[in-house]
Length: 185
Image (cartoon, rainbow, N blue to C red; front, side, top):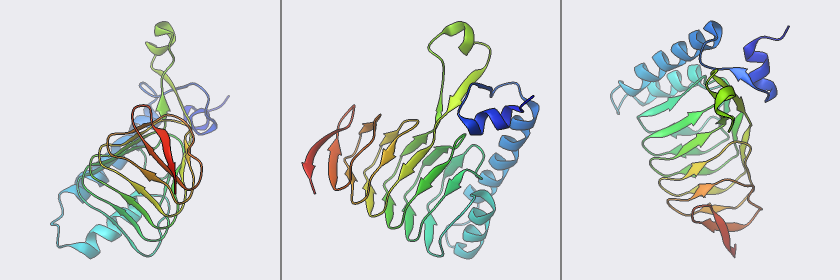
């Protein structure tokens, strides 16, 4: 029989709310995030070292401004020259991969977790997770939300306040809720 973590990583319904192993992993990650968010802003080296303990993979050059929150951490991969401004939230129940030269404005969220529409199933604490991929040379404006299963191409700009619920092709400027392409870049 598969563990709830195995189901989570496979993208099928799993018990997110009551599985003791997943709860323990989230608590561990949240404690690391708590420590990170309480470091002094000028403790750059300590901040970098702690992010490397939280996320699964980083490039050499990256910066995540505080506060930063995530669920598990190990499902996050940061490319080279990654920068995120304040209040980055990543619900990384599935893999969240950022390419090189990605810039994320304040108050952005990446949600891999989704919930069944059927309330009976949802009330059992079941959810699913779909990966998010962000390509190279991407600028994500403030207050953007990226939903489960979205792939964002290379050389993309996402306007502030957008809700990204479907894939974005390379060389696109997208804005709105839901985000839609308004210009080829």
